[in-house]
Image (cartoon, rainbow, N blue to C red; front, side, top):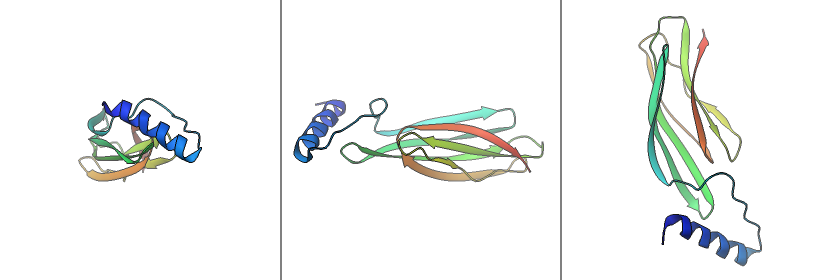
Length: 121
């Protein structure tokens, strides 16, 4: 049985057993890890985005990576991750001056949107 079908079957079992209403938000989950990268003229970042199932219907996403300042422009570079299910937004540590790198690990619930930002210091 595919993991998508298994997830659907488990959701029906949990709903029937508890009387709760299960509501799916967003697309089907891709369990496991994927690589990601973001590049701008002033900075870059890359890493992994991993989704794990805590229990049927509950997923945690861990975003790990490294952000690098690539421009001597008086700005720091950072990554912002928005998590869909709990509405949280988290920022990585800042990398600056030019050539500086910062490793980070952020986590939340639901699909993640990963963006690269800079802020003047």
